[in-house]
Length: 119
Image (cartoon, rainbow, N blue to C red; front, side, top):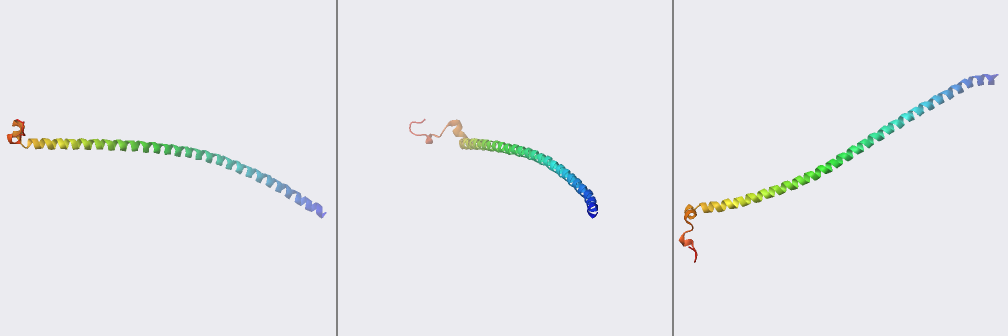
């Protein structure tokens, strides 16, 4: 009799335990599915971030190349301007020397300055 009563008490407990294991397994399966979905979303976010960073990198390289070209052209323009200023300065200096003696401009050099054979 005792075995029957123990068996009668153990059978519902085993049924309840099996039910709990089944429900726990289902919940674990749902958690696993959620983790799979989350991992898929994380992978797509990482792919998007990788693409964005690649675009930024390409943009920075392009900007660096354009900036280098602009600086080179600017330096060339500054050098050409400096050369033109130097030439203008030399011309102004020569003109100012000639304008220092207006009679020389009007009448030419003094006879004392003329060399042999010059009139």
